[in-house]
Image (tube, rainbow, N blue to C red):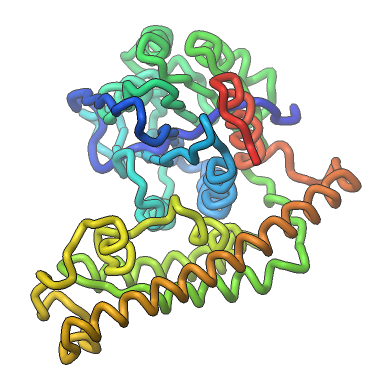
Length: 380
C-alpha cells in the first residue's frame, strides 16, 4: 500500500439531497478572518464501514491541524461539509447521493451525523457527487480562502452519467481543489481513474487501507486533556430554543469520541479549547462574548432553570464566572497540548513505520499542510 503523503483539505458537505441544488458563494471583506472550507465525500456502500470508522475517530485530529494554522497571523475559520454517496437506500433519482451537512462551523453536528452513517450496496457516481458539492455548497470568494474536496471510495471513478473530467474541471474553475482517496491499492486507483480526477483539479491522489486501525501514540498528557475537556461542559449555559438539544449533543459527541478510538477524546478536548469551537447559537457565554445577545433582553423562559430566579446582576455575574472558568480550563489544555505534541513528534521519529500513514487522517493531514502552505498558510 502506498504511503499517503501530501493531500488536501477536507470538504465535508451539507444537509440532505445534493444533486441539483443551486450554487451559492459569498465574498468576505478583506480584513475578515481567512476561511478553510472542507467538504468530505464518503462512499457509504457496503464495503466502506472501515472508512466511516476512520472518519468518525479522526475528525478532531484532522481539524486540529487547521486550528494550528495561520494566514497573515490569523487563525482561520473552519467550515466542514459532509456528503455520502453510493448507498442503495439513497434516492436513485438523485444519483444515490445525499448532502448531510452544509458547510458549517458546528463540528459537533458533523460528528453527530458521522456516527449516524451506515452502509449498504449501491452505485458510486464520483463525478456526480463532485458536481453536487460544487453546486450545492456556499463556497467563499474571499482572498486566501482554502477550498478543498476530499472524495474517498473504492469503485472506478468513471461510473454514472456525469463525466468525472467535467466535474473536476468545474471544481478547478472555481478554485476548489479535489483530492481523491482510493480505498485500495495504487494500481487499481490509477486504472480506475482516481489519479486522473485529482490531476484535473490540482489535487492529490492517495491510496489508503480503509480497514486499518488508526495508530495512536499515547502521551502522558492525554488523561488530563480528556478530563479537562469534559470539565469544559460544566461552563456552558444553554439558552433559547436550541439550548437543551445542542447541550445534549455536546455531551453525546464527547461520548462518541471516547468510545470510537484511542486518542479521539484527547483530540476533541484540544479542539474544544480553541477559538474554533464556538457555540454562540445556544450557549450564553459565547453568545454574550460575541455580542449575539443582550442578557438584559432575554426572556426568563429562555434561560436555564437555575438562572430564572436570579436578578439581572446575578445573571451577569453567573455568566462571567463561567466565562472565566472556561478560559482557565482552555488555557490549561493548550499548555498540555503543546507538551503532548512535542512528545508525540519525538515518538513518531522513533516509530516512523507504526504511525498509520496509509489511513484517512494521515492522508488528509499531509495534504492539508502541502496545499495550505502553497497558499501562504503556516503551522505552529
